[in-house]
Length: 179
Image (cartoon, rainbow, N blue to C red):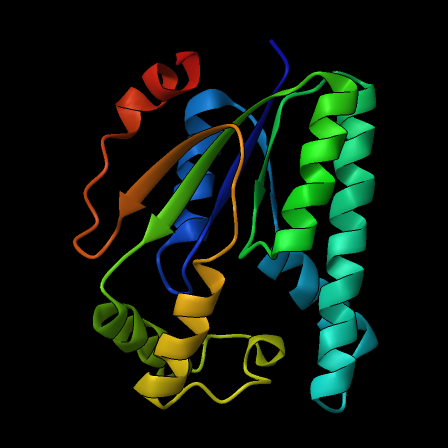
């Protein structure tokens, strides 16, 4: 069965690490929104929040193109992102058109812990500037963004995973995929 796996959820919940491990476990290509946006940002550059937002839009346009290419060739794959509602609706229509089975892993966690992780990333100076266009140093602002993003409606077989104390048995991924 042709499959598309979505890995989404909260900022700093470990989506990239989770998607990479699933990709390794299932030998699937992983397309990571942050990495695509970093490539675009490093290549094209950006001056302000508005240009950074256009990079985000361009990133999803690439997601759309790649998803359709994979589906036309009947290749299973993983998309990882902090998905917006309209992005999920587009992908849902695409999966219906190409008859893809969808599994969504939605990573969440305690917002205070996630904010601490997020701030540690910023402090480490390893986080690409393209991801720092919005100041989320205030836990209240971070909380508001997280609670708003949790309102998106995933589709397919949906599994919510709390990553506050990240423990997930990746050897069971195949069991999730067979449900």
